[in-house]
Length: 142
Image (cartoon, rainbow, N blue to C red; front, side):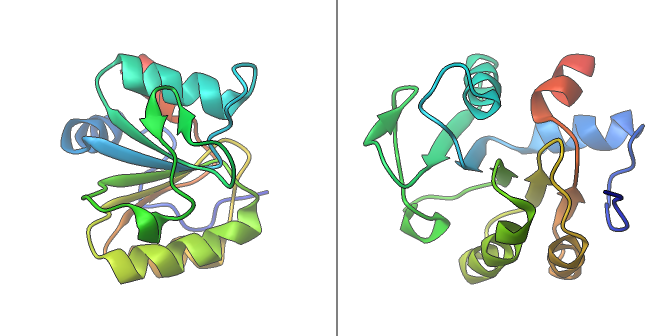
């Protein structure tokens, strides 16, 4: 699984610093209500360090004290970043939803998730794209 498309390189601390400084609201497709899941741990960490997290999940009404939405399209306020915890092939549909919104600046595909065609489309739309990296790990590293 190799990232052919990624605006941010693997060792680019300045770019990660810029992302985290510019982002306030993070939509998280695949945010599980189960505390033992990576998506839950990462979202909780991001929330604890001051980011507004927006769970996107097919069930539940609330996760980590936040209202759950079924899709990006349902979110009635600005979203700065999408931090995806879904299978790689879902990234194409996420990019489609991002294109309709017009407010997302960063597409972040979590550790183990690579979709080069979705990343290329997102990049062409002007988004900063990160693939196969963990937001929590990169934020802690800074």
